[in-house]
Image 1 (cartoon, rainbow over the protein chains, first blue to last red):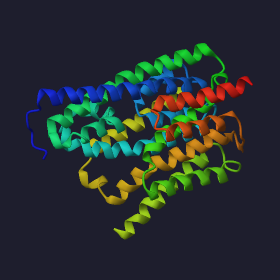
Image 2 (cartoon, rainbow over the protein chains, first blue to last red):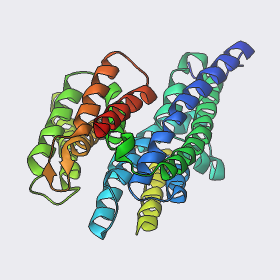
Image 3 (cartoon, rainbow over the protein chains, first blue to last red):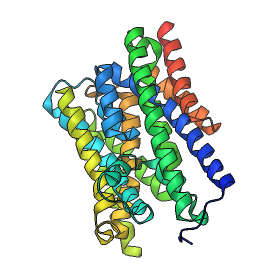
Image 4 (cartoon, chains in turn cyan, orange):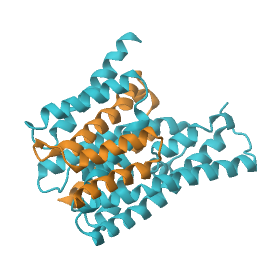
Length: 233
Length: 99
């Protein structure tokens, strides 16, 4: 299934089209990130730095989601949230490594664009062979990188120009963004149970624990559920 | 402090991506690790939705954000794409702020 076969032109074009349109759609979402970053007190350059250097939507929202970072404890909360959300990218890398078979600088570049979308498009070309998967990975990964960064800057500059974020509903845009990221992952009983447990954890802890602690604590729901299911299999 | 946060979280997230690509397969391929990493975003994103919708510092509150998120849920049920969901929530909240 994975042997190197010549990729027909029409398939190559289809993968390019799919990858670019997905990249554009996801990229648009960078506007929301740029705006959210701006309402959390990040300068447009700091927002752009997150998109260019961190480049993983959910983790980036976790950084700006803690609000204006005025203390080191908030900084630690932001960093911890970003890293916990970023753990899945390590698994994507593991999946992509034997497909891409890269070393040195190319491997570092590929690692940076190893995200939900690039891995998803690559894996869905599996029936067409390795070169199709590679093509899907690069087109989608580089496409998202380009659009995501462009729209981040646009969103950050735009929100800066607009002024009060609440007046334009940006206060609701951030949780809605998280919800949009969460929605496609809520498939099956276990994810729903984990989601509910995490939500309840936050509702209980929020009035008592320092800011940020409730969200980090909710990671336990994933650890417990993932650990326990191991017993049956 | 913001720059430090930006750079440290970026470096950490890059290392996670690179580690996956450079590590021997056996290290991360245990089903337990896979499951936890798969469920981690579900837990954190659910927590973030709640914290960002109802949280105000160290207290819970019900304001325009909750209305925005409620509309976002409806729009998601209608299978709307990402940007529409975010926009719908923002417009709802913005309208409530005007009233």
